[in-house]
Length: 94
Image (cartoon, one colour):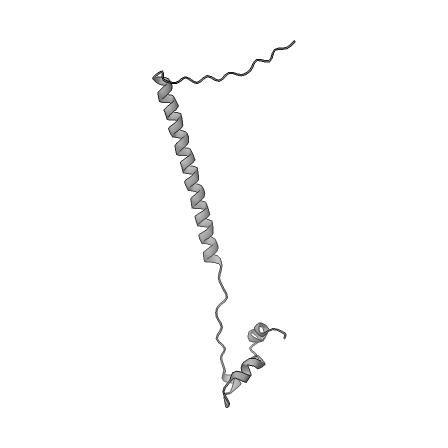
């Protein structure tokens, strides 16, 4: 076993830790407490939620602006204030 992590997983105590034990300590009764591995579920879910929320807000703003612009054009054209005409260019054949 090359790495201390492999020794820990196999239940062995690395030699450098054995040297740190006080004299008269039974190595068989030593318990090594390690921190739990990092769990990335929470940060990933949070990032996806924030991204989805921002996208939803942008979509709602776009829909609101679209409806407001359509309503403004409809009101102005009904009152005679604005007229909108689209003309396609005529292709003349020679």
